[in-house]
Image (spheres, rainbow, N blue to C red):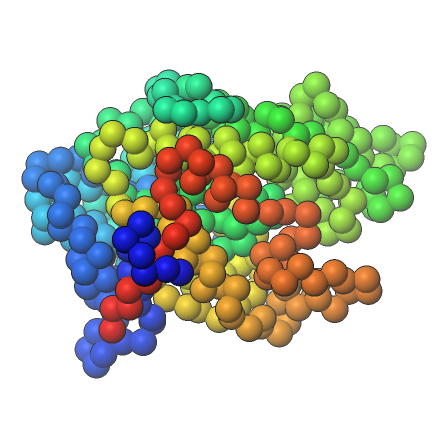
Length: 380
């Protein structure tokens, strides 16, 4: 954190509330203080990009937070809608019909969230638009859900958490990966291919349920799983599904390139139009809300953050989490108790060993997405 003139402003408030005020009311105060009203919303379609949570998962953000943002946009004259794109993997969000039912079942209706839900890349995840990436080194054209790019104003509303592949699931992850159509997600994941250690594989087939691309094959004779490299898109879902650490990436650079591609996709989404970003650190699960379940939080709830700079916001949220004490009986403390545990002095690296987020932040800064230098301003 720095107070110099080159630092981006990041606004923060805790979950402590005044009498007769709840977290949603406080979120409204936070984003107004952070300057959301400086955006011209008058008659403008406003995409609020968030994650509706996979069915069975309960760590995703409550609809109350979405309604606070949508109501604020409407007060400022905007026309908001909640949005996300379809997933590349199996689950209840791989096409718009199931995705809408999932969002409704998880509480995101026009009544509870204050605005409609629109799946940005259409019925089958094919309704995208090629968006040039200014300064892109890995991606020249990002495949972004059409409805997201049709919006006049873009707002991200992020549940900040750990991630089994990228280390951190923050604002850049929410925007870059989340706004990509199914083809866009494949484009970002295309570099790395996982490998399976036969000594550690138990033959449980849990990973197969996560693969949407016939990228895994089970050998009935050896009772071991194998990667079908010609089909695998490198999405990493199998890694998160394995409870026995039998699956990892064959290329050390795979995660780094994914992180860089994700930053470039984020730049494609926000370039050239008004954008504002909100991140909430609560129920900090060790892995993504894309799973049909969630583990216990690894740290206590911290608060709500807002900024015009998505990178500064991610850096501020990461720093806040790194100062927190691990919660007992969590994946984090389980990892720390393992024989041979190596302390990386970074809770996200300790939660999911082998992941990292720093290459994403560094590349985001390099391509002009934002700055890691920020001034933290507390809103009481």
